[in-house]
Length: 576
Image (cartoon, rainbow, N blue to C red):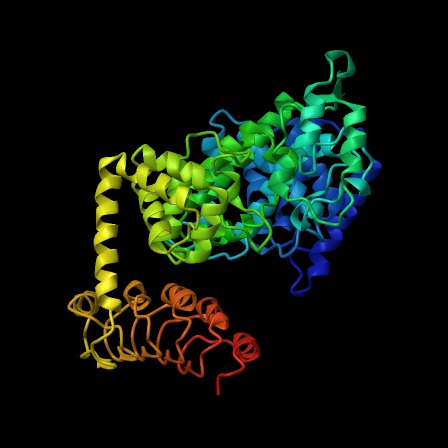
């Protein structure tokens, strides 16, 4: 009746499923053959309906007990495909997610293993370059995150002090808010405490083994040290997630060993994340979903997990699209991202800085060649940058040259050390000589003299502008018009060298966000800026909020949003 009724009502098809679900919950002594007969019988009803929660539990049990059954392939595949294509919120239907998770694990148990899973993922994406179903990727990522979390869940729950997945996203709680039972250090380690712990005798260090069905963790606990650590926390500052994982060997040691089953689950779903990162159209959304680091700290402290996930981060670092590689950075100020996690000194760094160099290269090549980014590197990663430059890494040599060119380093001794590092390799020596030449040209360019107004002909390019500015002195140039030329953000590197520039016309050019970031940091005296009909967006326009001297700003025919417009009105009070 449900299959042949002309009435278009979901409840008509759902009613028989609810009846079967209730009968199954009341009969626990069914044989495996009975299971398969029931599943085959209700299969037609599942073509246009999600299975109810109890029926999902029944399907999960079948996937676990008989993963090689033909029912899994023939009946469950279209059901799972429909779930991934149409489900809008696994939070409201968690058992649908669990069923999808168990189905994928069942595929992995077949003889071909991950090849079957790979074909399934490909079938969900489709044969074209663009997946036609927008819900597939977020649903697959949700399944992967939940499965990976489940590998560490029993261990997390066994620790009163361990934060939940939600807490990880929002920042770890304070140690004083948690019970001090075998903590993973969630605090900044005090050097004095480290030295005190290092002098404690072995008799006071009692190894403790925390065992769960999934994980065995060996830690060394010192009650006295824990009390001192807790006593040192008297402020309300939130400990940084990455610092939480930077555990000093003298304070505690930790090794995570998953059970065979948990290890298989982890391997399967990390491999799926790798597959997802291989699709060009999915990579931007995947990077955005993973940018807040949605994994528990136990996973980030697990060497095998971070080593396997490194492939995904590499794919982000190799993607030339800004929307992808910008997700390597933290989602907001004060929080670390994948860039910090896989940098030298980070908990996930297992190489000599190759991935770090790749990330810096792609970020510097995009829109992050700014003082802010260079300052961050100088403050936190100057040592690794110099070491890689000493080994001939061209990206790091360029970084050190830019630090000197933009006067990022104030300390004279550090400047001399950087110069020595550059002169120790052929590539460094060559780039440092080029820097010296540019500095001499800059002095000549900024020497008082030359015109006060300048207009470039239409169709002029970045190279034309560079050639013109290298021809003499432009220290008096106050008004520059590049309207209707072919200049891009690349010309910003030349514009920031004009010390007296007050009016800049970029009307109908290809000048974008990357150039605006540079202008906002260097041209502090700029008063008039015309960005009409340029490809700038909110991301670049917000950088102008620091240019307090602006009196006139034309943003007609740009991608300016109403919210950004209101924000700029607040910051740029002098703009009329």
